[in-house]
Length: 224
Image 1: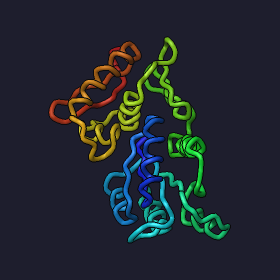
Image 2 (image 1 turned 180 degrees about the vertical axis):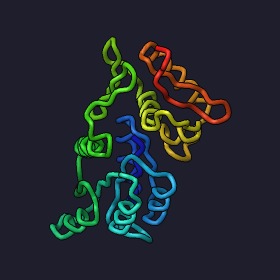
Image 3 (image 1 turned 90 degrees about the horizontal axis):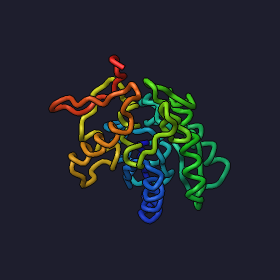
Image 4 (image 1 turned 30 degrees about the horizontal axis):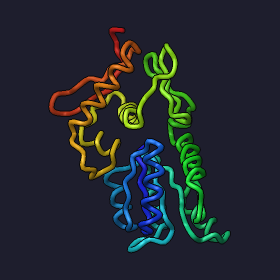
């Protein structure tokens, strides 16, 4: 998933970012509430993690504006405030879940998996395309022969293409989804990942087509 982390504590943000990347997620970190909201408006996200106390624009306002975007972005609140009133305020603003600092990274990752199952069509436990089945909760892709082993980045590529099935996705957008916005990665790295993923889903009635000068599109193979 593409996760936006809005947190002004640099040490905590780096730790969360590392843990989520190890889980195979793309993470964009912003340390300012206003910058975070503008990023969500401009780029969107699969999930937002928002601290309550932020510079320039507080977490509650970020949450309210994010919900108003109507982009179906689940929001997880991280905060040092553990009072009942603070929890109620966060949830009333539109947050989907609430974690109090300090917390265990394993629990954070579990909460994120739970939230991913609630998001729009992701409410379905298993989604299919052609002869492929994608279990979002377990983050497993399966074909007629069983589970298809994917690296973390191959899985991130699959999710980015699958979420935009039948639509062209540019290489730069795929880079952002796989590595995070602004990552120092050559877009040619995407070509290598696409080539690997193509080989792994070959014969599964799905194809990744290259659209010259534009990017890639995931489609069901009508000739299969």
